[in-house]
Image (cartoon, rainbow, N blue to C red; front, side, top):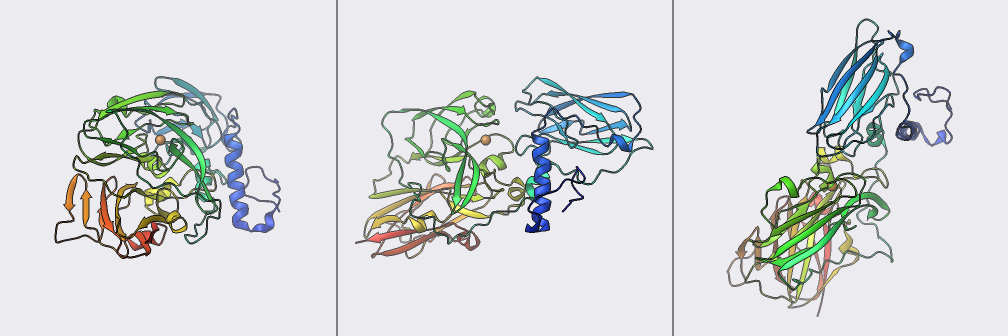
Length: 457
Ligand SMILES: [Cu+2]
């Protein structure tokens, strides 16, 4: 079968019998791969459709604030276009044209030259770093004059190809299998000392997020959520962020008040940054990647919790930490889909990074024990309404305030939290049994924000 939308007419694709939709996807992915792996390609844009003038138009373009300036370049049709790109952003950028020409990645203050070839049609350009195009780093090259022609068919770009790929689907009831290990939800103890010094390594890893569903996650220390840090009021945290990823990342700790300018700046792959803050107030505080677009970086796994104990926090028999977040699936083994994040269309909502993991590995407790559950809503965008079926909360601490204590006549059925809010609840289980915990926002419970306390005598 010959696919007429291919940019190389006559190219034959094997496996066409699997259906036209898959074939089209394969073509798009083929185009993407070809362009990504051919950085030196300088294919003139529809040169055959226009008479070359022999002139060259040179344009200076600046990358700044996640935008190209100018974002529209007019070129007399038939002219050769040369772009001199200068980056004035702290983040790295490049410029890729739909025709295949591209610059290398350049850092702040660096410049690169791009030869776009002869311009005969409207041509799109963008930054190829993950999320930058969707965040608005695009430009348009527009030929002027009589010879201009509309965009050619088959000018699909890598980002378009990505979003055209088939979604993976999540079965929230699927068993992850005997080898599956749930994330340990046990709250870490408060470490000794008043200075907590540690490194956090940014790693881009491929992990399962539901049975059989793999995603490339961007992580702190290889886990989603990142490690739970803990301390007391007055403690100082000295965290060194080490970027072992392929793109820029940063960090923002809500647990301390600092001027964002220096410590929250994005750092390039291979760089380190030391972030120091003193915890002056109690709560469970979010930390997250500070690189734009944050929706993409948080939505793809870059979040975690810092617990600062209230000074009068009594000890309990069991203490757990749950972080709720949404999953917006990209294609298998690739990062989450920013377009779905922008539309707030999650494929799943999860506790501690994996769909319904505590249904399959319930959290243990015993009858009569006081159980404390710390909860953080990492979002990036959805609220939670945490509820434990069969119990009432006699203690609620939310965003730095005790809202219920065991001696109060009242109680609570949910801990409601907006994105980045946190707190804890306490309960005792009256009898042995299986007590489901959910976000009582039912659409989210049914897409994976669900687990079980297994209570024994
Ligand atoms: Cu990041």
